[in-house]
Figure: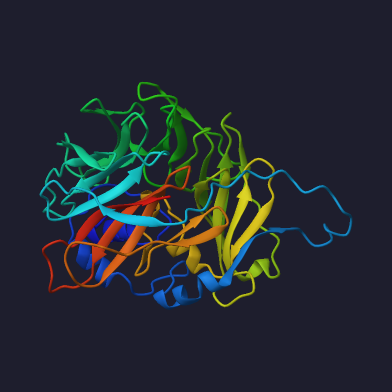
Length: 399
């Protein structure tokens, strides 16, 4: 994997998993990489209509399904939408550039990396707890990134140890250990210590789960006929995971806590052949997905009840998936000049200041707590004339 490939994986909304630490100028990659490069990218002009296109999470029924009345399904409850939020900068430990990657379910722990473009050096992993920097952990190998952390302060990530060979790692009690199973990636950990990722060489990876940091990996059920795993993206507290395979078309899958798998069906659409469905993440008992069909009738953000399968449409604009859903960092930063977060079936505007320094800023969100009271992400300066603090980890505290 070359520097440009990795930088775009880290910093842009590409559906893929990272393979290590970038050896590029991160702010420059952000500035230079905003050009349209594919069917799953959107321009900032779509943001203006984002809130106006909110439809409030209306329940979707397949054609003919509403001809006969049925009791409404029991849906997972959404957290209360906060009345106000305040922006806080997290301590950067004196580093010029710090990138926040993940947060625990309660929003009390965050994990990130310092100076991720510092010439390929062994940049320290950064750990925050309750807004304080509690660890700057030297990594044992170059190009090691921690992507997620749980409520016990245990974090997981991956290294690129020579060429493009990746190894999954866990950080616990101040020490890094390689997970069992050989080459691969570890991308998410929940509060029970369950870890998900994939193992194997590029092109032959399999989805796996570790029951604990000490456990042998368990291969998750491979969907029939699928061979090209694109990635495991997110993990819920109950052990549910989501990911996708790529072939002639992209197919999204949900792995239940017992390891069985089902394909994520498509929401009722007017023109299903007009676009493509992409999983965004697991939040609040729902799997969020975007149907990308720019200017089409079905373009927008959707969510499905993980248990019952009911679909809701959140917006009539797929930019919401780029800007509003706090997607895991392994799916790429989804950058916006105005921070907006999706909470349940609602979009909520977040304050863009105060921030230290001057100049234009874009925001990338990658975490929202289960009670929707803490949102985490990064504030990225786009002004090349102000190189002193190009990227700053931030959290919003809401009430």
